[in-house]
Image (cartoon, rainbow, N blue to C red; front, side):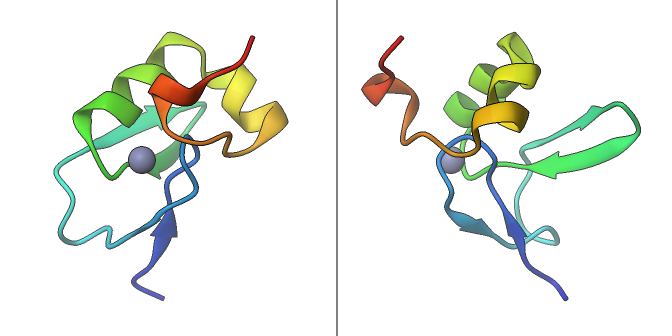
Length: 61
Ligand SMILES: [Zn+2]
């Protein structure tokens, strides 16, 4: 307990410490940075389907 994984980059995040979180379909997701949070909010389904794909600037579409 006390640990979450950033769905965007795969980094471990402490839910009690990170200010970056988003609720999607009733579930709370935690992020290591504002950048990851924005990337997730932009396309949540992509990250939930594919899993962490690296930092946002390393995306390959
Ligand atoms: Zn991240």
